[in-house]
Image: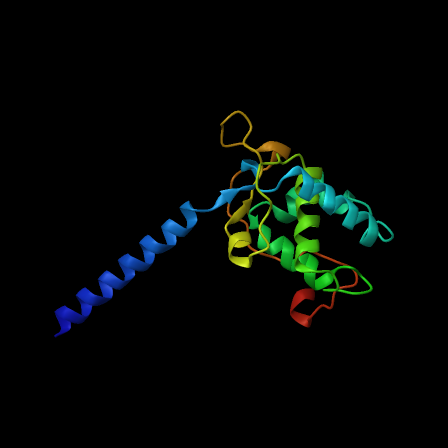
Length: 168
């Protein structure tokens, strides 16, 4: 009986591990063209209509973007925007408007457009990895960032509610 339970447990662990590895391998990098040009243009319009009255792109482009988002997913970015933006109406845009803004942010950061639109499906967004562009195929990435696991952390926003645990 003990041998059977251990065998079943081992098979379950092996299956879960294989499934997790398959999920990781099905992920897509932002450098593989995860949005298209027309979507980024719509995102630019949404950004102009809903974002530029408070800020420009300096907080989510270049080095600032790399520090905050490399190692995370498109869903993490979507969730951050949806829960904190616009400042006067967080969550006030449609899911598609937020996704279009993300396409625009990817374009601003030099990530290439593809033929398909960035999906508004949360599971599809979770499979899109925000990673830095490999520089010459070495372990070094552009913007001076090296490949290393990055823990998911909330992006600072001055108007977002903070819990006591966030201030430690």
